[in-house]
Image 1 (tube, rainbow, N blue to C red):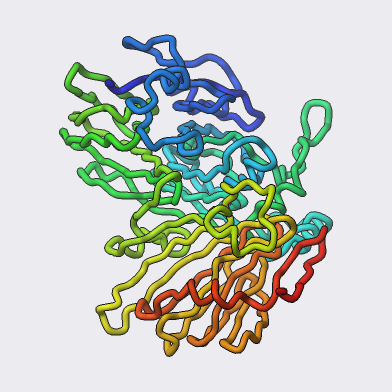
Image 2 (image 1 turned 135 degrees about the vertical axis):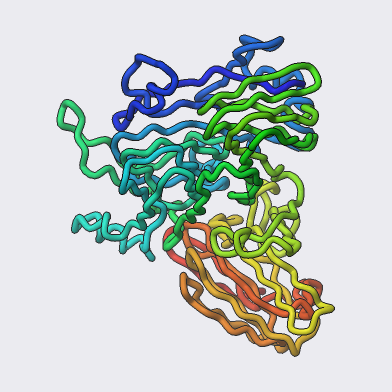
Length: 498
């Protein structure tokens, strides 16, 4: 398949600017969003030229899935690209993660990233907050101090801002941005500056759902990538769901084929001509093109800046560059990172009663740099996310393990959400420590340990340990933890294991 151009889909918004309309010579007013590439039911991209003209990408995917999208790509792996043209600030909002979105919205979770094409002097955006609890949020709503808690980032042309799901965020006034994100249209409006419509009514908010999904204290990351007209390539986003690469082209370069998945290609500065084995495709400023998985090598000629979005199939194990803090890749790029997901079916025997619960339910995910056991002093580093699900009332937990080398200790640090760190010695004595953002836990090498989410949002915990520690899961299977933890309504019940 050749590169595919599609018709943009325009949405009118109350905060719309006119930058994009002027660039594209459009006379319509109030068009704040232009969906450039989408297979989401809300906005179906239609092919604008070539042999597939008039067909939607969704229809093409039905008839030529592997050639168009890639063999391993599923619905949750799809990407969307859209321009946001803001004269006024967007509402402060938050997107759910995958588990919550599927359970409550019949949609997918949303992680996104913004590239700033143009911005007024002094422009800024919101990407995060310092809220640490639901009660703190409700107090700020009551006393009108929401804006005091928001994390603002000044931006200018060339900046790239990463906004993982669960982050409170809002594009600011006077900004034209390209958004590359996951296949979702679920947004919870958290705060809207008390704006009123023509009838004097404020837009509805989604406070309860926002609190359900917000990751307390989570902030976005801004990467400065000024346009300097020198040829280069740089990875600017490396989420678990997808990556984005920046390409500055001066003259010509080759974009190698990527048969595993489709990609999106957007021009955010200058223009170019794309040559494939069957012809050429012109790509102008603010235009995007869909690159099928079966597309071969491409020769790109011109003076331009391109952004390449590449999904990571979530149905297979991913090994990617590290993602320390909110963007590990800017700190290290030489480590092997493992990313794994545990479904109920894989550890069902550890629960008291797994019957009647979907075995595909995601309980937790682990992402870690495993270090090098052959190097003295080497450390492993990881992030575990335990989701707020229950199995017939029993709170989700990690499998749990002892260290194979029990002289080796470990440190946990709570990052988001709330829960318990369950500990057990070889005599079966079991106790728990509360886990919350900022809590630090020193785990002796001779203690079995397990994480349990007792809250209502994903619990994230960082861990550091020597790679020589090893993981002994079989010992926990043979000697289970002494207590089980259940959620009964709003109460947490701890029951002795029988």
